[in-house]
Image 1 (tube, helix red, strand yellow):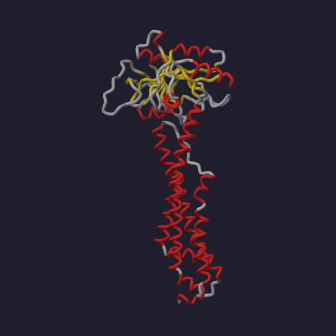
Image 2: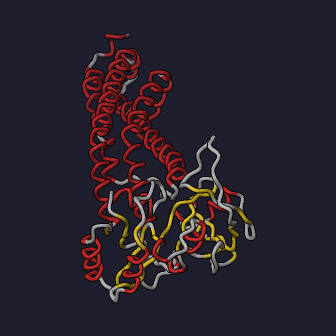
Image 3: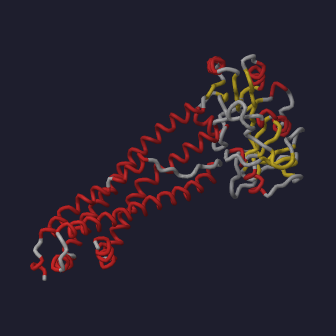
Length: 396
C-alpha cells in the first residue's frame, strides 16, 4: 500500500517531481563529467605511451618533447646530430634505440621518419608485438611508407597508392603548401593500436634526409630517439649522461604525465567547488519540493488517516516519495555523465589522436554525489513527522 500511494502521489505532482528529478540529475552530471573525462585522458595517454621507456630530444620543454615526439600534437623542439643517436645505438647498455624524424605532413597527417626497430616494440618482455601489419609489409627502401589505419582512412590511401608530402607538421586551411618532388608509395597498413601511430605516416628516416637535401652525413639529424636500456640501472645512467650534454635531454614520459596531472588536479579542485555548489542547489531544490509537497498532500494524508492508515504508514509514504525522487535523479545524472563522458571521449580522441578508454565510475567518485540521498531524507523528516502527527479532522 505504501509504495502504491507513493507512486500515485508522485504522478499527481508530476511536474514538480520532474523538475526536482531534473535538478538532481543535472547537478550529479555536472559534478561527475569533468573527473570522468580527465581520467579517460590520463589512462588513454599512459596506455598510448607506455611502450617507450625514455625519450631523448634536444634541450627544451619535456612536455613539448612528449607531445611532439610521442603524440604528434606539438612542434618538435629541434634536431640533435645523428651522431648522438649512433652513440646511443652503439652503447653496450642499450637494448634498442629508435630514431624519429619529423618535418612533413600529408593532408595534416604527420610523416614520421624512423627505421624497422620502431615496429619491434612490446609492452613487456614476451608480450605480442605492439605494432602489427594488417595489410602489406613494412617499408624496406626510401620513399616506401606504412600507414596507421586512421591515416589510411582519413587520406583515402590504399596499398600501391602514391602521394607527395608537404613541408610542415600540419595542413593550414587556405594556405597553399609546397609539395616535395619525390613521391611516396604505400606498401603497408598497420593494425589499430589505439595510440597516436594510428594517424601517422611512417617511412624510413633516410627518405626525410633525401627529401630535405641532407645528403652529407654531417648534415643529418634526428628529432628524437626512443630509448630502451638493458637494465633499469642502465636506463638512469644513460639518462644522466644525456642530460649532462649541453644539447640533449632525457625525458621520462611517466614523470611528465605526473607533472601534467598535478596541474590538472589543481583545476579539478576548482571545478569540484563548482560541483559542490551545484549539489547544494540540488539539495535546496529537494528541500523546497518536499516542503511544497507537504502542503499539497495534507488532504491526502488526512484521508489516509481517516481510512485507517497508521502514523508509520503516513511517515513512510513521505520518506519514500523523497527517496524515489532523489534516487531517480541520481540514476539519471550518473547515466547522463556516462553518456557525456562517452561522447566527449570520442571527440577528444579524434583531436588527440589516441583512443580513450570508456568512462569508469568508482566508489570514491560515486560518493561525491551519493550524499544527496541522506540529505534528501533529512529534509523530508520534518514534513514526515508533521504528517504522521497531524489529526485527520484538521484537513477534512
